[in-house]
Image (cartoon, rainbow, N blue to C red; front, side):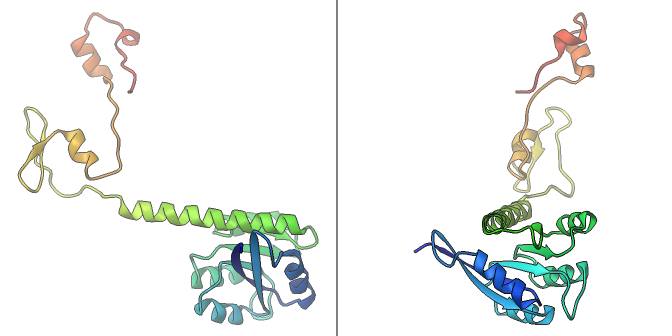
Length: 204
């Protein structure tokens, strides 16, 4: 049995909702289970019950119009990818929707089954990558407060009283990685007779 994706189609035109359902294969390696709703309020109520993997959203609904429709849904379910559907080929609207978090913007009448399936797969993958990035950023350790540093050897003392090299200290507390080179001042200090091209040390 293939992977099953539950898609919420927020569309007030029954014919368009049926057309979308027919384009998404109910069987195969990737199976789609489609739930249609005709209003934003019903979509928000359905999302509260969880179990939805992707939303196909028409921006023009009886109880909401334009990008405000997308903003309201995105706020209610920030972790669920949204593909905007529109009968209007408005490039500015498309750019604004994608800029603000929509995974794609598809124009009705220009959609076929392959395009819709591909858009759905890409949307799910991009949302997964975004979630992983956010989780990684949340776990990055940051340095703050006073750091005792030796004025001679430049080692740093940690909160347990141990002294370590600056590189080791920072590497253990962040995702930073170090390379080594010589700044122009140090190059002149250690190699006063060489020109700058000879003393430039590439990063390792």
